[in-house]
Structures are given as C-alpha cells and as structure tokens.
Length: 277
View (spheres, helix red, strand yellow):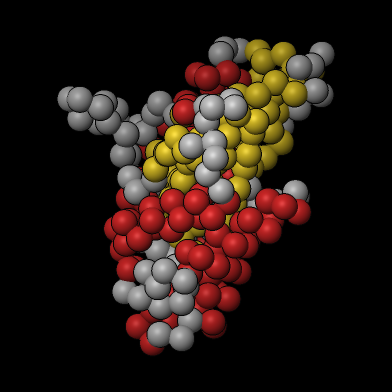
C-alpha cells in the first residue's frame, strides 16, 4: 500500500489547470497549423493564422488562451493500492481547482444553477473517478468552455439506425451550432451505454490524444471529420473547408432497445493536461 498526501493531489491539480489554460496540447496546436495551411478561403485562413498566433502568445506569456477558462472537469484513475491521507480526495481536487483559478488569475465562471450566484473560486469541479490496479493516481484535467458546450447534444437513436444516420446527426448538430460554437472544432462523440453514460463518453473523448486504437473507430472518426468539413460551416461560421480539426469517438455496450449518441462540441481551445502521481 502506497500513501499519497492530499496536499500532493492539490498541488498537482493546481499546476495542471494553470498549464491547461495557457498551453494548448501539441496535437491540437499541430492540427491548427495544418488547418491554416490547407484552408482555401482567405477570411478563414486569416482567422486561423490569428488563432495560431494567439496560441503561441498564450504559451509565451502565461496568459490564458481564451477568456473563458472553463468549468473544471477531472478524470482520475486511482490505483487500488493507494491510500490517500490527510483528507478526502474530492476535497483535495477542489482545493487544487480553487488555488489554480485564484492564484493563477483564471476567470471564475461557476455559479449555482438557479440563483446564478458565483461560487467565487470556480469550484466545485466535476470529478470522474475510476479504480484501477497499481499504486498510482493518474489525473487528467479538462477546463471546458461553455460557448461550445452549450451546442452539444444527446440523442437516443433507434437501434436500427445506421452509421450514416449517426454521422447525419453529428453534422446536423454542427450546422445548428454554426458560429456560436467557435469553430474550428474538436468533436467528442459517445456511442452506447445509457442516457447519462453516453455523455460521459463524449466528454472523455475530448481528452484523448490521437485517433482511436480501434481501427474501425479510427475509420469512423475519419468519416465524421470529412462529413463535418463538407458542411462548409467553416472557421467562426464564416464558411471554408475547415470546420473540424479532430473527431474522437468512444463507445460502450448498450441495451438492445437503444442506440445512445452524444456529441460534445469543443472549440479549437480544447484544453487538457495530465500527470501521474
């Protein structure tokens, strides 16, 4: 049994959220630069160039990439041989979020849902935990902006629906969002599970680097991306051949009577950072 102090978790969470808000993942940065080179519409190409410049400036200065520094999502894989000492895991994570958003001068955007009163430190975080083997804790922090989050959708599709039907639903979601989702987009797609779990899958997909390790899902990701880019929505909804930078799909077995599909929309500022304690 390995002991891990709550203060270590808090420190790690704080550092990860500050990093995620100022340094775009290498994969997304590379996709953004490729998009600028491949875009044929002058206005869209110009905007993509400014987004690339903004990304570099944020990393150089430590100023957030976007003014919406997001709501804090945390994916935690906790080894069963870990003994957390000095408090509760959830409290340690929220203390790290509060420290990041207060000491890191990140915008605090979390409010109570009905009274709309700001909580003051961007807590509570939304925390997903999974018990795994080993004596380590893996943390993935995702500061998710809600301009794009608001454009996300879930559909409980008929089990007879085809792959093409799923792709049409995703494209319709992107078209309806238009410029409000701040394209170019990263699109997380969940397929399967139940009403609640499919949304989790879509969110989890956003934090995954690279294409799916499953060849069939990787092929589907490519098909969806091609179809989304063919919509012509374009950068900031102004038209062009680049609407999606990346599509990531996660699946889970589901009931014979349903085919849940969730589309979690994210703008190019799809931030995430991770560490293992």
